[in-house]
Image 1 (cartoon, rainbow, N blue to C red):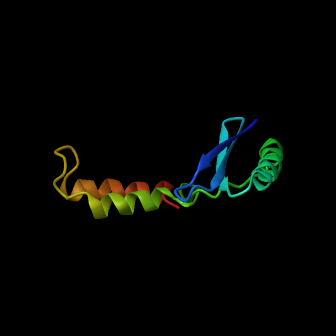
Image 2: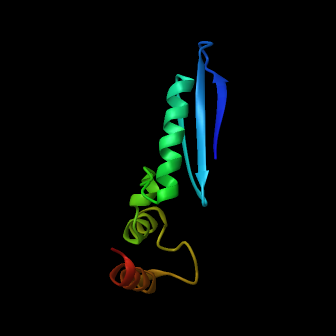
Length: 101
């Protein structure tokens, strides 16, 4: 079921934030008119129920390879005693080859 919340923007104009949640999948969007908010809620809720809603979240497009690269880039080589030096790179390369794609 959709929830529509009315909020006032800084300029005093209203905006309407819609939250649709069906079977554990949630989508939220904000509109300038209540009519647009209601229409989007109806369409999105129907799509979620039919299982044809493709979320637009950036996290949906991330892979394990992306996470491994981020780990390599942002974690210093001596970040932990249990995973250092060559063994660290060995494990990361293994998981990237096995499940990365």
